[in-house]
Image (cartoon, rainbow, N blue to C red; front, side):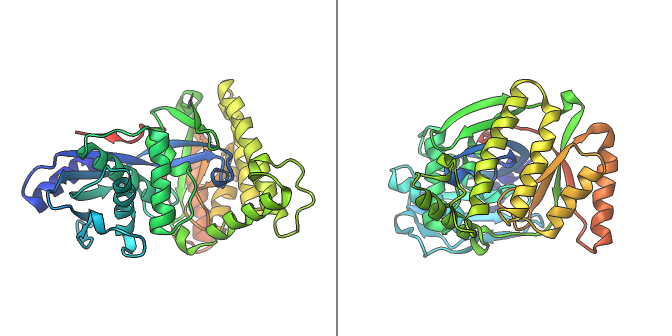
Length: 379
């Protein structure tokens, strides 16, 4: 059963009526371009088949209710709250994500009372942007109930504000933009500073390849991690260099030792994104493997956001025949991706599984990540 079908069925069960509509949004894999979004740089994500769905109907009393249905079928309710009373620091836990979206949409005149029922199959804590998929689906649902539309790049910035100011996580724009704007069989090349976007065809299977996602099952929380510290340090580095952001940095040699590696990662990662885009435009998809592995080394050694499980996933995948591999997402756990020839897929999976077992790591979960459609209304 798809998340959208499940959401509609659960809505009928819980509210004894059909929802007015169901909207869903995907998780994402970032092919390359990590920690560049909040530095005004370049990113290259694609959407996953895994989605978060929201079944919704309006309420006349201005109250927002929300319930999420877990994989075990249990319902977890948020405390019903008047949309007019929503404010940062009044809502915690998972409910802060949908309520934060309602809060920011209300400021633009687009959110009122509603019943929301949420289901999904995006793995949580895996660095595949489950929280942003939730936020994007809620935003589209509330806009749909209001019979309103907002340009997707603008909506992505509104959702970013809800997470930064309401939830309290200083994320950039990569994940919201990917979930809203990606299309089937493409990667989305985004210049975060200008909002300029280009859909680039991306069909690994046509080249005899697959993107293997390796969920290490090391769960991370950006709110509890050093993510915010990295962002603040990048802003300090840009100030010292006298540039608007590290996107504009050229000579970084004069930075202090604690900032130099972070700046080096951002500068070189932007270059790797551009190099990858050139390969894809030229139809040379197999050549991007080296850039993926270089990205991981930079994230591991310069940005210091990897972990032993991610490193083992990358090293064992490449050692077993992957053309390249890297961690994806904010880091400190989550998922790695590997560009794998289809005839070596089983070999790579076996090598990764064996490497984890040898170190007594929790067995990873692996699946082929297929570029899929972005967010929208299901029915």
